[in-house]
Length: 137
Length: 137
Length: 137
Length: 137
Image (cartoon, rainbow over all chains, first blue to last red; front, side):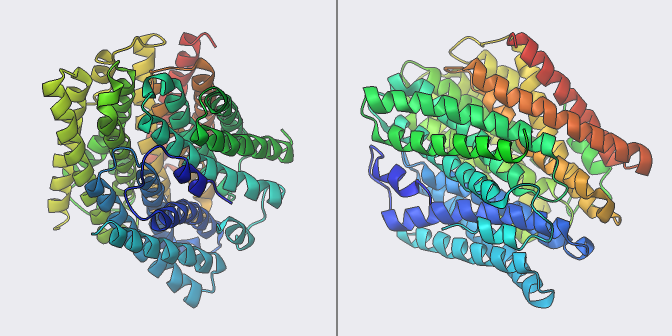
C-alpha cells in the first residue's frame, strides 16, 4: 500500500502526463530501489559472494538511479519533460542491465532473491518505457 | 504492490528482528519518502507558497531521512542494531515533526495533499516505533 | 578538501577510465549535489519565491541526479560502462538545464546563490562530458 | 574545492548556527558519503571479500546517513533545530561505528582504503559533534 495515487490526486496542478503511467512509474521506481538495495545485501550474505560482485555493484547502482528517478517524476510543479526524460532513460537502462544480471544468477545459481529482484527491475523498466511513451519521447 | 516481503523471504540469512515489523518499517519508509517528496512539490505548486516554506523544508528533510532509513533497515547482512536504532530514531522524529506540520496545514488551510502526507508520516512514525520495540530499544 | 583521490588510489582494482577525469567527475557531482540542494533552499527563502518555482524543482532534481551519478562513478568494482554512461548522460543533461535556469535568475534578478549554483552545475556538466569522452562514449 | 561556503554566504537568510561549524559539517558529510560508498566498493573488490561483509554494510549505511545529513543541514530556510539534531545525532553514531570497523581492517589487514575511509568518518563524526554543540544540543 502506497500513497502515490492520493498524493497525485490532491496536487494543485495538472499532471504533465497520463496519470496511470505516472503513478505506475513512481511506484515501480521506489519498489525497485528497495528490491535492488535488498538484493545487493542478500548477495553479500551468500557464501559465494565472490561470484556475485557484478550483481552487487549493478544492484547498488540501479537502486540509486531508481530512487532518483522516482523523485524526479514525483515532482510535477514546473515539470520539465527534458529533465524527466533524461532520468527515465537512465533508469530504463539501469533496470534492463540489472535485470539481465539478476536473471543470470536466478537461472544458473538458483538465487531466489535475484529472481524476485529481476522481476522488480523488469516491472520498472517497462514502467519507464511506458512513461517515455506517455511523455511523447 | 511491493517486493519487500519476497526479498526478505529469499534472503540467505535470518532477519535480525520480527519480520512483520521489519517489512512494515521498510514499506512505510519508502512510501513516506515518496509522499514527502510529492508534498513538498504540491506545496510548491500552491499559490500561497510563501506560507508553506516550513512545510516544504520539513517534507524535503523527512523524505531524505525516510529514504535512508528504508535502506538501512533493508540491509540484514551483518546487521548492527546500534546503526539501525540511530537511523530509526531519527526517522521517527522526522516523521513526527513533519506530520505535525502537515496536519496543521490540512486543518487550517484545507490542504488535502498535506492530509495525505501526514497520514503517510504517522504510519511511518508508528512503524519506526514498533521496529525500535522489536529491536529491544 | 575531499578524500576522493585517496580512495581511488587505495582501491584494489584499476580504474576503468582516466583517473583525473574520474576524480573530477566524482568531486563535481558531490559538490553540485550540495549546491543544488542549497540553491533550492535559498530560492525558497526569497520573498519572491513564487517566481522561483521552476528553479526550485530544477535544483531538487539536479541535486538527486548528481548524488546518484557521483555514487555510480565511485563504484569501480565490476564497473559496467553502459551503466556509467547512462547515469553520466542524465547528469550532464540535468546540470545543463539547471545551469541555464540559474543563470537566468542570476542575470535578471541578481540572485547570487543562483550564480554560484550555476557555476557548480557548469563545472559538473563539463566533468560529465569529459568522463563520457574518457569512457569512449 | 566545493561551493558550500559561497552557497551559504549568498543565502537570503541568516544561518541558524555558527557558519564555520555548519560549513565544516556540510562538507564533511558529503565527503564521508563519497568515501564510504568508495570503501564499500573497494572492500567488494578485495579477494577476501568474505571477511569484509560487516565493513561493506556499515559503509553503505554510513554513506546514506551522511548524504541525508549533509542535505538536512544544507537547508537553512525554516530551519528546525529538532530535525537537524535528530539527523546529526544519527550521523555521528553512524560515523563512529563505521570508523571503528574500518580502523580494525586498516590495522589488522592493512586495508589502506579502510584507513582513508576511517579518516573521513572521524572527521565527519567530529564535525557532527561540533555542529550539535553549536546548536546548543
